[in-house]
Image (cartoon, rainbow, N blue to C red; front, side, top):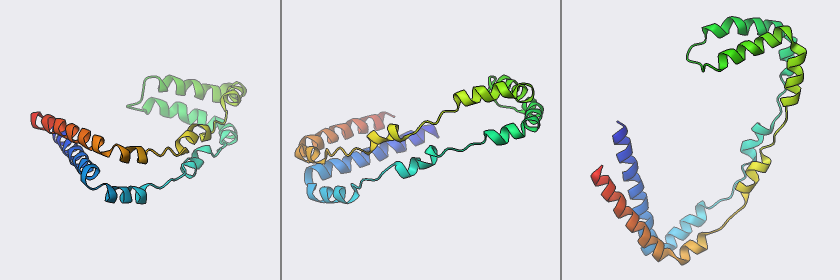
Length: 159
């Protein structure tokens, strides 16, 4: 099954690469029109707005700390297929919820920092237009793509 998926993936890459090489070499104007149509800029800000929202659940956890502590201590031994490290961590946090809630709250306040994804995603929104450079060197890139397709055909036959 895995071999079939690999073969189909390589065949798909070969077909796409072959078609793009032909379009680069023989049909650059329709390719440029299609590129201009599909080359739309969109902001990732709307997608990551959910990640930047602050959700505060600390008050509810500390208000119901005894119930959550006992419930987690009872349920942790029944968890199967869980990492070995999560069970001791869960037990320690449950004990802290029950016995030392102030200490856990201080640690939580220290670790509870808001980190914005805006600084991380801003470089993704800078438009870098390399289309003109590609169309200037379309013949070289088309020939290079055909060479790559022939190598992929060779790999496909061997596989």
